[in-house]
Image 1 (cartoon, rainbow, N blue to C red):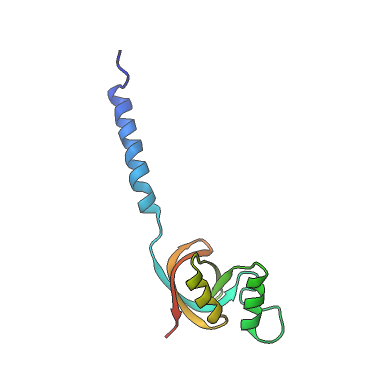
Image 2: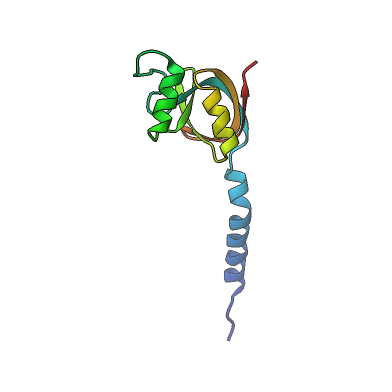
Length: 116
């Protein structure tokens, strides 16, 4: 009794290759984005009167995520490490260049530097 026919062995091999190679092909490519550091709640329009940087910091302290405003587009920034979060805090409402992988409206960050 054969457990695998030639056709089922072929399909199994194809499935294995798809599992191994497709995620890498679908993974986004790292890009650079230059814009202004904001927060996801306010985006480009800060709701608090006064200093936009203070608004960003207050919104983040209340649970909003950092965001990057690039023209008319607002990206939520997915920052994992404390050093990156500290840099974003210092750069609130300033122009920066973020490197990372965009997935829809979110950028998975790898670095942030002041814009030139």
